[in-house]
Image (cartoon, rainbow, N blue to C red; front, side):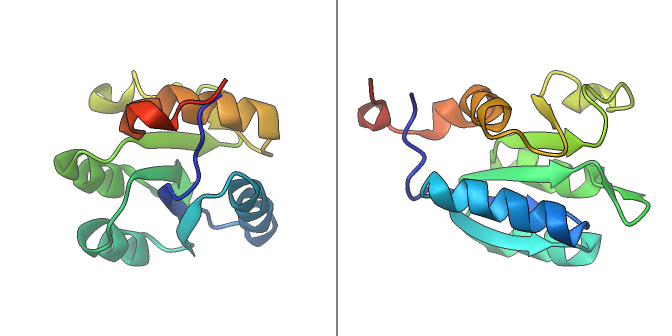
Length: 130
């Protein structure tokens, strides 16, 4: 199991209760949360300026797609996990189709598995635990 303690995670989620639930799960894992942001412009600003290790992005934020933020993060080499109210969103554009996805509402076990797949490589070799 990967230790996510200290992982700085950008969170973009426009549904307050969903964002709070995600924060609780990430806090329990020891993550440092940047956000959550509920508007694309705020998320873009954070994606440009914050020190980030990873990002969990809602695909649809107040009727707008998150892809401009994902592109900024990709340019910086920040791994992304997409989330949606639908499992495995088929509408992801080509550069993002291979990235992991997780369905909302969040199930802690499913979220951890998706995070291990998406963010495991950003952890130092010593961060792995049995």
